[in-house]
Image (cartoon, rainbow, N blue to C red; front, top):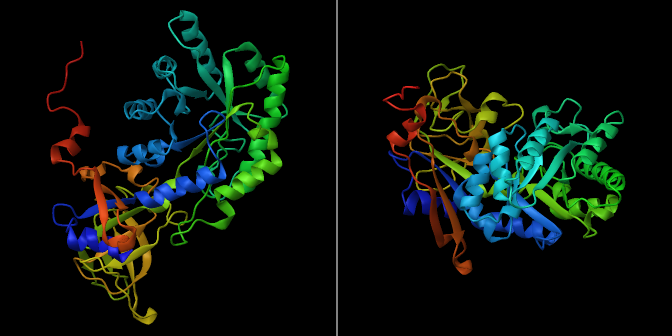
Length: 445
């Protein structure tokens, strides 16, 4: 990896006073993860369609790389739907999953031809009203999100299949008939959707959720006189590791997931219905790294750990700052030319790493063991390809990091020969400040 750092920091000198932090995204690694997915779950786009969770990393350069491999786009908002369509994703490969849709959101989705998964019965009512108006040209592709209630994982905030979940309609013994009645009343409903959770949810719960869903699918189809549903969306959420270096945990490989699904729910892949997946973190996490310059080091009080002050903190690592016991990243220390600094274990120093915000709680991480750091060194924060670049906060009006994608163009030279693309240019101060509205407020009539 040092050779990559050396290109960005030494050869290109991209990290500097005007750009003290950058994000880099390894397209080769991202593509290798997609290859692993397609090998485990061969996709023809008809009976099986993989989609990439846009919220994991909505950078256009990343989405275009996913699109080039045949993946669709799973969208958590109507803006993500419009982003995906603007990049040329086929409407039938765009999945709109927002849990809180307005009438206008639903109207746009119906008229654009995307697949829409409804969250609740009120959204079903809105669809019915819009369809009754007679202005939707094509037959709608609409599913209903069902919560299989198979339980949570390690982290409550990422567990979406508990009885208390805000997502979908809970599938319990005392709710089955009510949900079935919705499918009987709404003949235009032609799909189902689940998403059990994400990081920290055991593989077995994903399999259990799919099994419970398919058992219910058979009931739906039976009560409709044998008419098959068209789509079965099993979501995504497969865990990855923030601890292991550059490999995915064996218990969460795509191949193992497919094997367990095939054993427990063989009819899922019988070709009678279109199956949709929505992976994000497991595809993109380890493709990303964040490089940020060590600006200052405070060492004033002997019994207090020295504090490294740098340019990313809660502005980009929101979960890590507010939930440090749950989320953390591996961090390496580089010299200004991109060489990893090393030392004997007994010579390492425990640092607290502080971000740039005017907020005392803005610590990227505490008690980090690193070689001795000096201003101008660079922190390499690993595994930031998903749910970090996409979670940037404008608090304090700090300009976000420039983002680069890279790929190797000469296998023999390995990391020395890179094709680098700028996925997100440096914002001007005016662009960053644009979020705070107009300097000439509009009078409302």
